Length: 219
Image 1 (tube, one colour):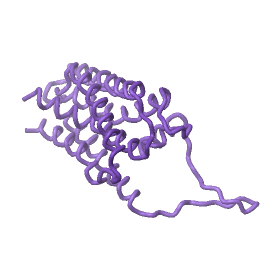
Image 2 (cartoon, one colour):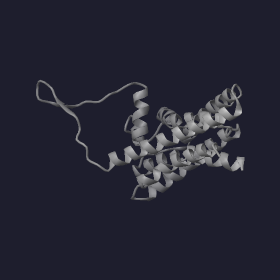
Image 3 (tube, helix red, strand yellow):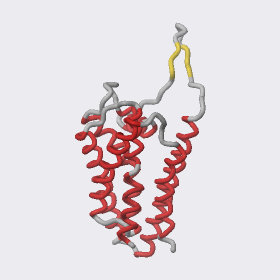
């Protein structure tokens, strides 16, 4: 039972790679093996570090409290993923007006907030296509590094929560790395074949799965 719980958690964390790969395939952005490997290794390392930290913290407090805290954290992380995906879905299916400012010469300027390097990562999370900084139509090693850091942000909270809740095992990092590589590759391949996009409403599923695993710690 514990093994399957770990596998479900690994899939929920890794499935973001499928959406990213699908997006790049649909936009005809080249995503070679080396960038895919970089992206997968970063996700695996992020989960390993935070999961190990969660295990260490769990050893400092009572087991019941650790499992409760871990469950709460998984619920929060899953809830945030669901919320952010719903917001993005609504944003992409509406036509909001851009905030425009006119300078003294009448030229129109669009206000934007750019916080480097965090701002770059936030932009990638909202729209993975922005990882192609130079608009070359392909993802290079540096862009893959930035993309990997962006995807790892979701994995950090889930890894820490899994460690506290007692879900985390060292091999889960390897599973996540392999699955991220596999999902990204499959998503890219399908995206290059399909004209339509992955329905936005389906993107809430990973968050719901992580929330479900969090609720399991209370029963």
